[in-house]
Image (tube, rainbow, N blue to C red):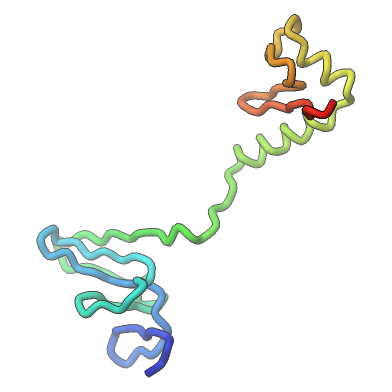
Length: 126
């Protein structure tokens, strides 16, 4: 017996990447990541067959994401990161002025700068 699980479709020998389960009471076909163990009431499918899966008329297909795949950062995430780096690279005298309570910036004595929801903190060693 091969250690790699194969697609359950007839005449398909490709490795399985997803598991299909039918929920008859809800008229739903659930396609998710490959199950840890092969179950007799589930079907293992290769990438091609899992992408082309259709359900019977009146049924719904629920596709569950793997979750282990890395998510791509959004434009907002990248912009926030760039702004935080810019704030951290500011000269120390400008950063110290920005963190003073009287300047309208945060009143936290350890806070050096602030941009949106991000804060630049002074090292406790200084």
